[in-house]
Amino acid sequence: MHYPLIASCAETGDMLAGLLRDGNAGPAAEAAHWVPALVAEAEQHLCQRAVVRMDAGFTDGTTLEALDSRAIGYLGRLRESPVLQRLAQPHLVRGPGRPAEKPREWVVETTYRAGSWSRERRVLMVVQEEPGHYFRRCFFLVTNLDWPPTRVLAHYRKRGKAEGHMGEFKDVIGTSLPPTSRGVADDDTVRARSQALLSLRLLAFELMHILRARLETLTGEGWSLRRLRERVLKVAARVQRTGRRLHFVIARPALPLWRKLMPSLARMAWPPPG
Image (tube, rainbow, N blue to C red; front, side):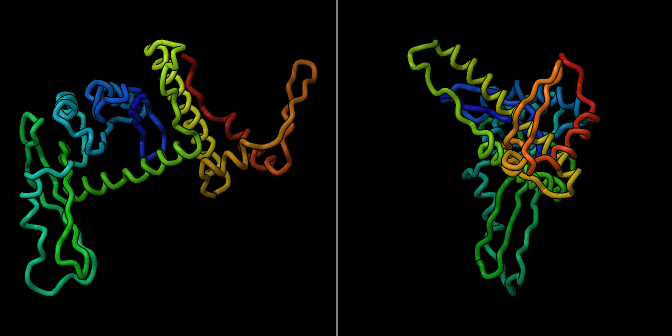
């Protein structure tokens, strides 16, 4: 079995890259080398500055040290630990007075050093209070950004868009990979094939996402990948050859959408090959 690591840009919905690891690898395996290289690529071709938003599995000491050493901004959620629970304890019980009538949330800034970290880091404790609940909830974020706490929290919450895009990827494109060699090929060959298949699936998502974005601009409507597949891509057509030309005759229900889409795609600035 293989364990994929996928990076995406939540703000735009684009899939950036995918890396296949051994099936028994930890969440952060190879991330300390792969993520900084990916950030360098992004800052060269896509943006002036990239900030890495990570799940709790990637906030190990090796990965954070790699990001710190290259001055890459990051924020990520921390797994609960006894030390963090002790830090949170004074903030989890509601004090005297009338309870809040509406949900409340605030951020407490502190420092913390996990067992795998070489030093203390900036940690934000997000405390949440619900009306009628005596006990509060909280979670922790680690970051090296010098932003105000509220801005760090707001940026972390944008991860929901990335999770939504990943859900579309699984639903429409699929994530199945060859599980074993089945005695036909060696492990290296199977892994290379699986990496190629993962890359092709990510490329398919990206191409569909480009079409989706163009259609949203042209029609003024929201488009899911499933709707795009069923109404635009998965349509009846036939191919006619006339001299040196190939003509694609598309089923009438999809024709208005393709008439809008084709001129727009022809005007797009595609990068040169290679």
